[in-house]
Amino acid sequence: MDTNEENLKFSAKENLIKVEQQLDDYIASNYDLENDKYSLKYIHTFKTKRVSDEICSSLSLNQRDTYIAGIIALFHDYARFEQFRLYGTYSDANSVDHGDLAIELLFDKGELFNFITDLNEEELNLVKLAIKNHNKYAVEEGLTERQLLFCNIIRDADKVDIYRILSQDARCISFEEGHLKEEELKNFYDHKLYKRSEKPIDFYDRIIMHLSYIYDLNFKQSFKILKKEKYIKKYMYSMLLGISFKIDDELINCFNYIEKYIKEKSI
Image (tube, rainbow, N blue to C red; front, side, top):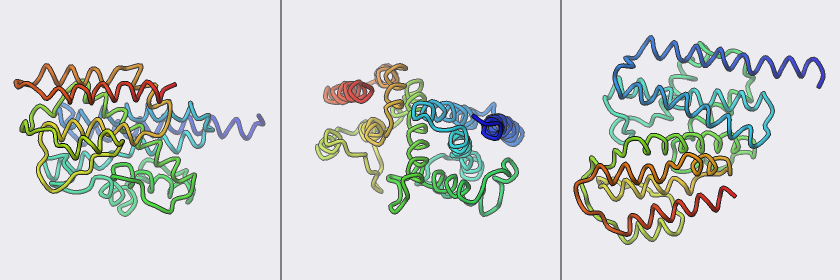
């Protein structure tokens, strides 16, 4: 490795540490982290970045690409804090798409440049595309292989940490009980992502939606993390401890199916 390459590697790593600290300071200074709603997204932000780092390492990405992926992870939920401040909810359906709002804040209003000044045009476009697509049902079509890589890294890292959150707090228990629907069950076993409709979702919808996130994961490392941390089993136990009604036995089969799926994909 020549001196220039060593300097570039060092610079990317050091710059990412600085950006992370700046973002930490910004969030802590502008939002009340004593409020559980804000602290949830604060912790998620930095945990997602750690997962992104693990995925990048497993793919043997160079330091510059790991830096870009790290920036994407740190800012993927940048708009969540303003979303909650403005609307009092994290529901995109009842407020605004937080991926699109992030693009407005970070790029249209230029807030990203309060933190970062060393990305070239191609790298900025990667950051923009990945953040915009991180929360969509599917990644937009027509992307290059490189663009798709960064979109998939953040989508995986985000979902892996969402499973961490679910494993600690099964918020599905606050929904109306409802019932397992045959069509949704079929889609689940056909490895299809749950697609939300305009109708209110119930307890069973919520869990099937969460479990189906698995089918959108792209990298072996994502499955390895889920297997190691036992997030699905912890989510199931959290859910079972929280509900007051007898659940459909088929829902437990769904959890077991996903655990088996994760095991197979992590090999």
